[in-house]
Length: 355
Image (cartoon, rainbow, N blue to C red; front, side, top):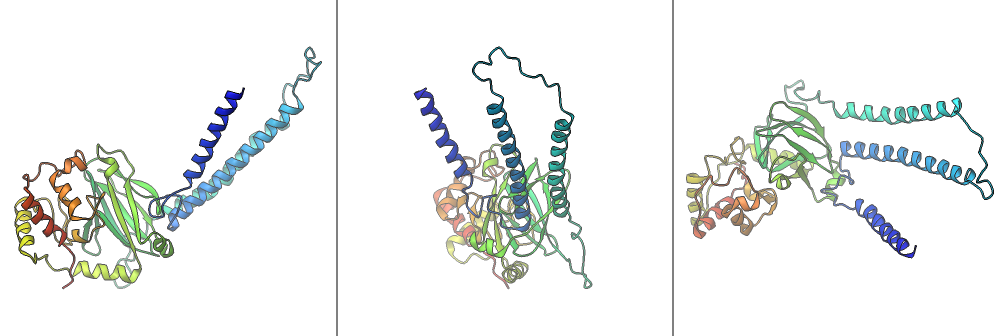
């Protein structure tokens, strides 16, 4: 008995720790810290349904406890046969009607929110002057990186998604190869990127929540897509409207990148010989690999490594070790230390400079 009690106490401690830790999370990554309208509505629905389920569990356990105590077999009644009850129409109606009522209570807000969040009719609409009414981003998932195209703005980026706060941003999702899934946990639920159709939805970011997260949120691929699925991350920069408009203007009026040092010029030559067939360095160009026009301003290298020269060299030296089965492996010749230094200098200098 004592041994069993010790095990029960240990199990209780782990259960409590699991409950406490499940509520932990960073504001830039946790779905339990909603940072936008979509995420907040989904979070409220979770709490609402959890409340209903908790109420049902409490009622069932209370009834169960009452029955166990009131109708337990008492001493001296071992041979007594209790009154046999064949059924109760009243009870059967009650326990049939109550679940139906609870399902209706849960279904009404769920259906309402689902249809509200599924409304993408703003895509393609134009105002009286012929300008798009909504910001649209085409998201194409690749093995194992993300491409973001702003079709109405003539801008293409990779790995870093830039969006304004306090505004609905509409996404059109596709995939270049296999099925992926676009998910920014603090902003809202995931949606699949399919090779053969376009999925559409919208998200928004609250300014105060963006400030709390430092203006950066983490995005993930939420569909198992291959050996490096766990490393298929991207970053979301949420900017105030004025700063976003300035970023758009800078990207639209960006000058062609120019190497400013001798080492960077050597790196540019290596890039033009080995990398340019897959990577673009223009802010409005799609490419086989990630667009590198603003690589020097990115948050991460390859989506997961710190944005430092050391980590970039490590990626260039052996991308297969960092992201197994990535499509960059073997696409360019092996580089010696001097060539790595030069290419790193050039790539780190790729920053958007307005004309």
